[in-house]
Length: 112
Length: 111
Image (cartoon, rainbow over all chains, first blue to last red):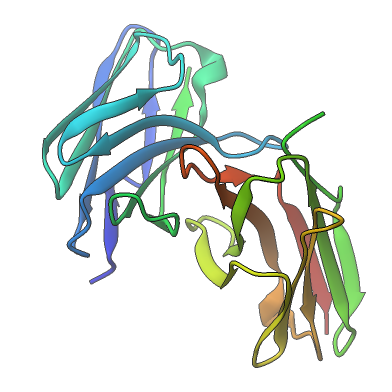
């Protein structure tokens, strides 16, 4: 089983829908991250959690709502998204304070 | 000036060629230098990690860091079609230990 697992792999949702992305890590790390990857743009860090506490929110719109119930699980709740939110959403984990991030396979999100 | 700039692509080379991928950065406080490889429809995977100036070799891959010029490179020797992927540089350290990524360059190795 891979170290960082994301579900679903693909998601198509309407602008009025509510959906959630799930991430689970089996590496014993205590830091987890959400990144957004859009075409021709650098990876954008969205949220950082250390020991289940949110330590960083990079001015992400409130239509994205993260949740970290424990150090192994991370969710991203989505509601009333816009078409420009279509992207690959990547979850990553690392030891707290560690720089080396381990990524999941990502969820390819399409907002219609 | 962007914190991390990566050469634009895409890049196409014949099998067996030597590939050179480059990034520059602006913040001299950066201490960690990484290269990630991302295959189509996959997440990035860590390929090389170094924290000092100089060269680090791993098989056909060599990561080079020049802190005085704020320049990092990844060399791929005897490139193979299986090396076809997007390569992202990532630089971290400094005040908050966050990783800052380049845009990535897509490499295609033709058989």
